[in-house]
Length: 209
Image (tube, rainbow, N blue to C red; front, side):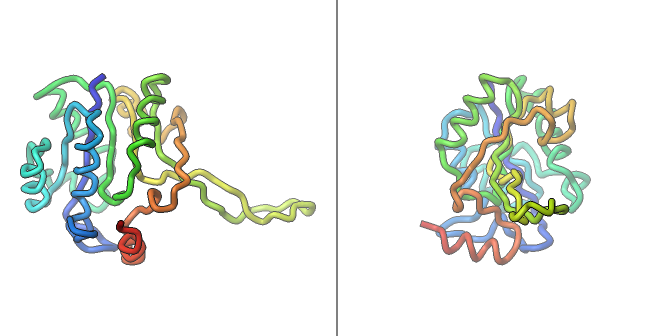
């Protein structure tokens, strides 16, 4: 099975400036995801899509696919992960090979555990349907029954750690989240850290081992 890992690392970020290049521990944030993907040894190729020359050069140094600097039209604040990944997928299919599974890895989730992604890949191989990492979140109920004492309910939300999907399913739904998702629950607090704000960054720094 040809599993293509795609790492999305845009240059500009609104809430936390240059977050993908910020040094976490002893290396740039994006390096955590590149190194994780390389050590996993399940991907035929690892491709990074970035409009940042520094990240592009880092990817080349680490010997993963960095075929171009991402065009400006898909490096905007409102550009979706779908548009970015489809652009990368089309290049890969035209230049290298067909793909059975895409694994989207976002640099903002640096603390992934190997066993969880390997288990998720097993689920994908068995079901052929997408698998996304999720976490439990407690939210307040909109409406309460008079007899109900619990004002909160648990819901599943994407944790950002990984998204596994077939090219066919991605093109059909134009999204990584759809009605056929297998939800892979991650309970590990550290693994669920998703860095988008300064508070997220401070939290991540406290958990670097």
